[in-house]
Image (cartoon, rainbow, N blue to C red; front, side, top):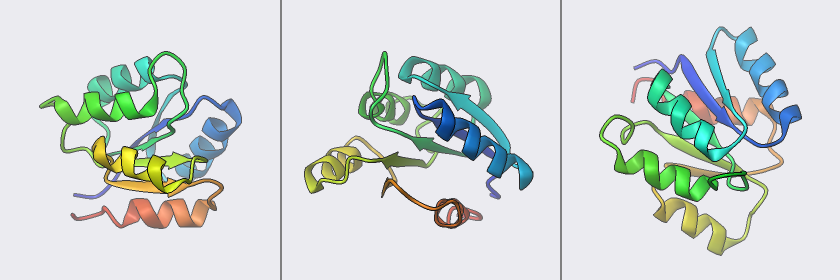
Amino acid sequence: MKIRKILIVDDEQIILSYLEKKFTKLDYSVYLAGDGEEAVKQAFLNNPDIILLDIKLPKLNGIDVCKKLKADERTKNIPILILSARAQASEIKIGIAAGADKYLCKPMSFPDILSEIRAYDNK
């Protein structure tokens, strides 16, 4: 499967806008969510190929979003890449235990993010 649809979840509008522009230029379909509840709604509605998920979110934190999506039959196979400024080993362990496929630490360059996403092409 080729990754074409990306759900980006972050409470910082500047990050959402930046990533949306970059991915759209590369012909990805991009869905955005600024809080955890919206993230779950967007995942069910748009069935993205991959999710970039921040941890610190309003309404429902990223760990709970991850658990909820991995527990649901409709979304359990969607790769979730946590992209967070929280880089402590304990935070990373919690993210992976919640079901994240990968835990990436901010700041991270766009080429590195793109490379991580492309690693899921044809998996």
